[in-house]
Length: 444
Image (cartoon, rainbow, N blue to C red):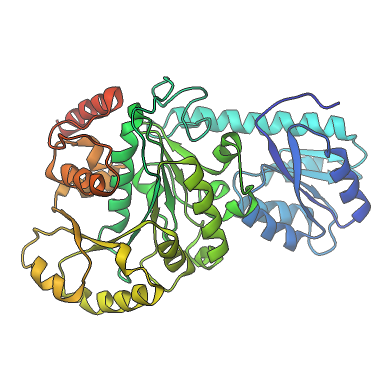
């Protein structure tokens, strides 16, 4: 019997000998921690599998038919940086060990090694890497490991069990900019998600899914780049169950420590956005809808991607972020036609960003081109840009600002969670208080 434990290890086996692949699969079939999720017979197949599934561990045969095991290991380390790599060979040597470890391989072992001995080695090495990442995370104040979408095990982000003080209608919110980027769409998504997540004291659970090809959500939250976070990419949701437990869900998301917000990083490279197809979008939204009260999806600027139109079809509300700029008119009309063809016009609302910039179009001018009701008018504030650059969202560092109040007012119209007084400190208990103090210190 394998010992009962948690924190599973997803492993890929790469070997051109089918009998060895089967032996490895069978060896871990009853293991409570290590699960073989992929079997590859060649290096090229393995690289693609690693890119898509980001396994925790990979066991690679040195003598593959199509390419060297070391070359395969080097390529897997590039496409899936979080994967701990092991080399299997019939003739291990010190020279091979030196060459392998120089490429980032953790161990070289003989193919005759038993499953139990191999399991112990894999667990030790993977655990050591995870502990190292945990220690690094502690040095990053805005990132911390979590234990499920409800926060720390058995409690909220502040260490207390969340209390559901009022019922919330669970909604999925799509945030788009039509067909034009650079209008503040991602900043609006991040701001709304952070503002809502600070309401953890009343039991609000919020998820932010980055469906954008450029992937700036985690950058704005000081969590890292999509390339660095490839092991948690939205594309890995191909491998999550349709009804995952919260412990499984945490392996596919990252928790933003100050707010308790849970984030799904974007595709690891812009050209991978085509892999975020309708079926995968539906799976992600379906799972998140069952686990969270508010799900916000940051969409690509182009309506032509599956990620955009599929999310718009599945969302309860669609926020179209625009700037009062006459250069946007052509794009607005094209977007309107597409949304109308999808039959989704009735759930679209407009968010006018930087409404007070000089020489802007008036709301009346915009009304001629875009028929959606105005949900919010967000002012220009240089603090918003500073917050993006530093990874400290402005709604948190200055919750009393006109921008932050406008964000909360807009969200409250479709997800009422902030109470009656939005101009003062929003109801967020200890977390809100600490963030307010943090904002005042950084402004000094």
